[in-house]
Length: 322
Image (cartoon, rainbow, N blue to C red):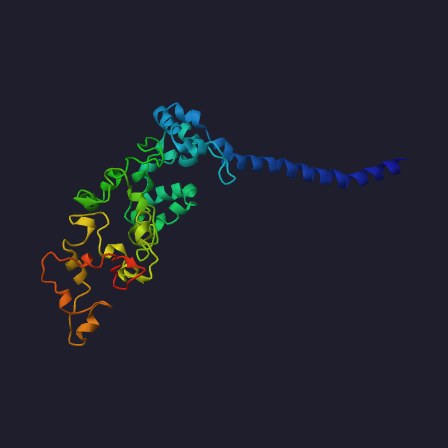
């Protein structure tokens, strides 16, 4: 009996030793995990919610409720939970616990323009309208999203603009403001057109952020459909240079927004027989320009369009007379 009892004690000794090792290891792991948890607080506990923000920023809270952002911030976006004010400003727990320390939260006005725009584009960059903003003239000149938009106190609710068009654009584009005050102009000041009807202010692959290529002038044809064609006989500048080869798009002192006052002077900028040492007179003028006394331009107020009435294009006559 004693032999059996001693054998059982010897057999259980390794098991007891193994359990002691496991016990020591398990006793150490929670302590290590606890230290790790103390330095890595769960993300969900870092958000305090909009009602907490309201206690100090009630005016901003009330302004935000009137905007389109408010309904978006209460929904999930791209599979991630939205957090109202903290969707843009980041988690606010440290900001609140520190008694309102601004360094503990993202404050837009204290950031560089590219940092501000990058944060806005984290949501808006997926839209076609904003896809080229980082390459736009506005971005390269230090204009950020909040230079034109106010998420809290917008004067124009649809786009959250700090000022309505065109006054907002005029704060920088003073030359264009003067153009729209000329006798002949597109009716932007009257509110019938907006700058954004022709320009994508967030950036475009086209020059001057136009919404279409200049050689196609699709942006002009949004209104001037009767001049679009296609024509059997096309006036070459309509395709090569676009409408701006003859017209000033914003405003002009000349009727029909023309570049110069007299129509024949405008036409003769291309259709003039001039010779150089290396060319003949007929080779240096626009193709199809006839010569002869019938085109004597000595009459001061003679206009080419008296005869060439369909100057933008024709389906019947290559000289645009009918």
